[in-house]
Length: 75
Image (cartoon, rainbow, N blue to C red; front, side):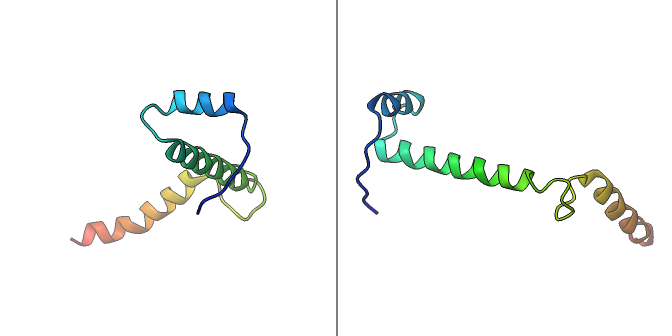
């Protein structure tokens, strides 16, 4: 999709310096993808402590491994 937007030229220059060899479109796409990814991570991390997401994966992993142990002995 083609979009016309006004962006500070110094920001574009800095972006192009950080993405050598990329076209302006490629650099802008990467920058937008990175921004969206970081915002999604922030949203996910904000769920910590809400009870909707269990951030302690170690306990869940231990429970899963304990369930697998009896099956491992049978073979």
